[in-house]
Amino acid sequence: MNRRLSSLLLALAFSAMPARPGAAADPPGVRFRGIDDGFAEARTSGKPLLLFFTADWCPPCHDLELDFFRSTHFIKRIEDDFVPVRIVDRGREDGHNPPEVQKLKDSAGITGFPTLLIVHADGVAAVRNVGYTSRGDTLAFLTEGVRRLKAAEEKKRHANAH
Image (cartoon, rainbow, N blue to C red; front, side, top):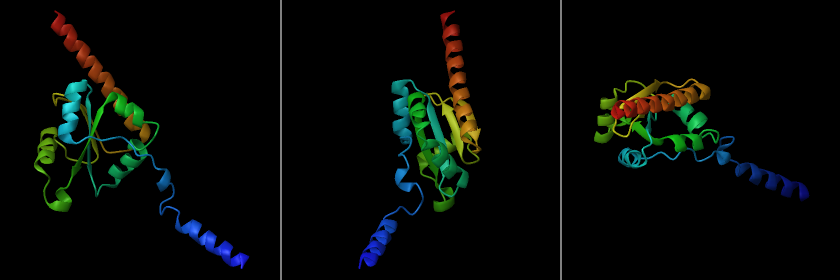
């Protein structure tokens, strides 16, 4: 009887385990905003937007999402430095995108996924990165983007002061 009870408890323990290793421990990740809310928040806060153009069918998009946007090492930094907005392309699945997604995709010249675009609150693009290779490359891109934005703002302030 003890052997049966042990087997039953063991079976129950394994059936309660998540289907994917680590799934229960996955952090919630970056809190992405919708397009309208993200642009409004960026105008109010003065932070640049980090636009993440993605598609459900795109394996590198999923890698970027899991490796970077759900990593506890990067979440705080992303949310401190940017207003993150996820834009999901539904062209392949639905044959078209919602109008606001298509308008943003067209105006940003998006041709591949994933694409990260850092833009000013006024919508002027600063830097772009297409594809996903590693956490390090993505972090370097974001660091360079912040540096370029600060340099452009300083140049603008200097020009306005004269």
